Amino acid sequence: MREAYHVELEQLADHLASMSVQVADAMERATRALLEADLSLAEQVISDDSKVDDARAQCEEQAYALLALQAPVATDLRTVLAAIHAAESLERMGDLALHVAKAARRRHPDPVLPDSVRPYFAEMGEVAVKLARQTEQVIKSKDVEAAKSLESDDDQVDDIHRHLFTVIMDREWPYGVASAVDVTLLGRFYERYADHAVSVAKRMIFVVTGKMPGYGTDDDI
Image (tube, rainbow, N blue to C red):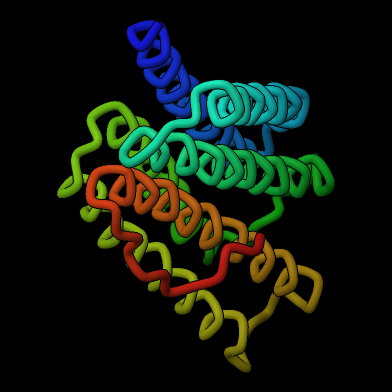
């Protein structure tokens, strides 16, 4: 009976890792759609978002069943609770990739981004996808040091996000208000995506150590 229980815990972790892959792929495609004005990629991200929602529901259903039927304690209890919170963060990451894809679709066939800011979004997209793929590995390995290392990459996204404000607030910004709004919102989507990846990593630290690392930001989208 206990062996089957621990198999279920491992399956729960596997489901979370799979969600990390899904949201990494979603943001990778959404960023390409944004930078290349690729409508088919944008549509793929939009249609696939329901799969992420379904995966969250499956993780939560399994976690609540474990709580109800197995009454886990100590590390096992932390694992189940962390899974519930991590699944929520991963779903939000999928939603943020969805927002990026919808922006690309809304402006198609025109590009969303002015040429001057495209490199910033290319870099943020690259780092965001890297964070999601690191999250997958942290979920599988429960490596505390690897989990802590996500903070530095998140700081890189934060720095670019802050710099974008100086770019669009410059008096010489020639692209108008609508473009400035697009850049502001899209920058926020990437910044929040990275924050949620760090949140998942911190949940894994909690599983191992029993202590929840501090948060620098809220968990809202």
